[in-house]
Image (cartoon, rainbow, N blue to C red):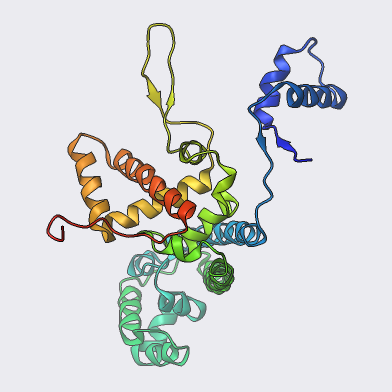
Length: 321
């Protein structure tokens, strides 16, 4: 027997229609059972295939790690800004691994000046940092711009070093997680079909499979899939007001993310997607509205590809025709 999913929001609002203000586990159970008996619009629980379940676990873990990395970098920059603002401005610590390596050993202006450019560059090269000479030169220039010792500098430097090591450790764990994601994603029967669609890579493709359960047959139609992903507008009509369409409030955030980001990437890499985006912008739509419209159009294509088991084929141009 297949179970059905009743959202907590549905049970919460339904409880207002039952007698009494009390709330007990027995009453909640009775409401849930009554709703399951009466409602015909509940979605059946689809467990998904084994690979899709594993991808859901791994993509969720990767999202947590990326968020932790962002928080650690923000803390690192905030701490540097308190006692060594010149070094905080010198590098983009979200992209420069060499700058993070530098902070594990040197975090103060006087420490950088004592080491000198040659020693810093040699120290960085020993730890396989890229552009060691350029990084050492920028760090030394930042140190020469500040000769003031700030109270608490020694402890702040210790915190910065630990945060830099934390970011580097998170980078390693993110890489390991992405390796596991790719290994499992490429074993899925739909992997090559999804990768053939412009804008989809391994990570976004894995998020799409994880969000859909690995099989679009669980959705009645592409319109239903668009509704779940938040790409289908919903009516907000009342009385004489009709045709008023709004963004939905309840949808699958991870699925919308995969569709939206892949559409953004396709705008830069696919001529047909760029043409459609430019047309929507010329109609007066904002960037976000145009990308959402493109994502909705692309979802029709992905649906047809997965339904028919065929890879993406670009539409022939007028010249080719």
